[in-house]
Image 1 (tube, rainbow, N blue to C red):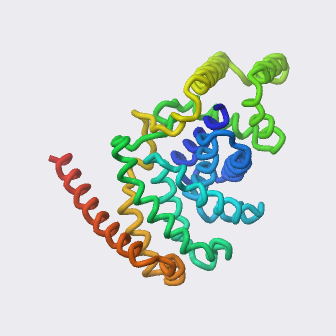
Image 2 (cartoon, helix red, strand yellow):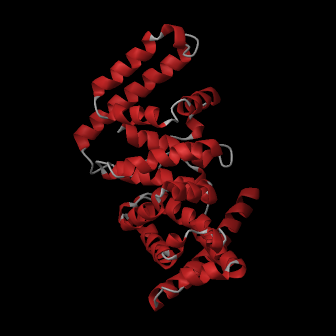
Image 3 (spheres, rainbow, N blue to C red):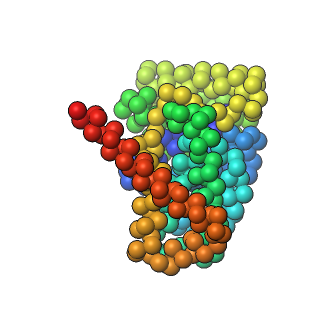
Length: 308
């Protein structure tokens, strides 16, 4: 469960600090990618994939460069698209749609050939995601999910979390961090070692930091107990009363604007995206455009009511 929480915390940084943490993107992406293959639960597999998807949403050009440099591009997109039915929550669906929109906005010549060849499939995936949205909204009209939000983290706590992650960005420390979930006793040994290194750490961890670490341990233990009791069946339920920056983005309008922009400025991308659509899927795209127009009108009406 700690690994899933680490993925979700990574998502908080990527969503809430756009353009401010470029130096962390490689570490976040590598952390998420390396967890996908060995994920033992649906929750962890979705959370791990969403770390990588979040890096695409954060900075698609940088994320693709990293994937290409590691030789991971083909495997990740294949895994993502093959497991698309696992993305069932409003947050999952919106994130996938908006990340693909960001990707589509890149010039066609910057897209690796392996992705270019699968662009028609990406549009089919978009259609599938939008088709799943109404049922997801019915399950959770509030549309929220992420269990961590910057509204719940004061600035010192956020700063401490960032500095802690920065201290763990080399491969060995990241592997050690991932292994903490394997054995509960290992967690205690790690923290005992930290507390035992008085010369190195006594100036780093003050009382507030220690209280924060205790809170994390208690939360992890509680989540382990809940996971043991409920199993994996409830892993993918939406969590209420949490917010993310995605809540302020209307996916219908964003997709309509992306597709119009691509059609006007990047005809090669538009042709690659739409060439594999059948008649039914093409009609659905027109319906999405109409829905976007309606959503835009509704938002304007809401803004007018708020101003009155």
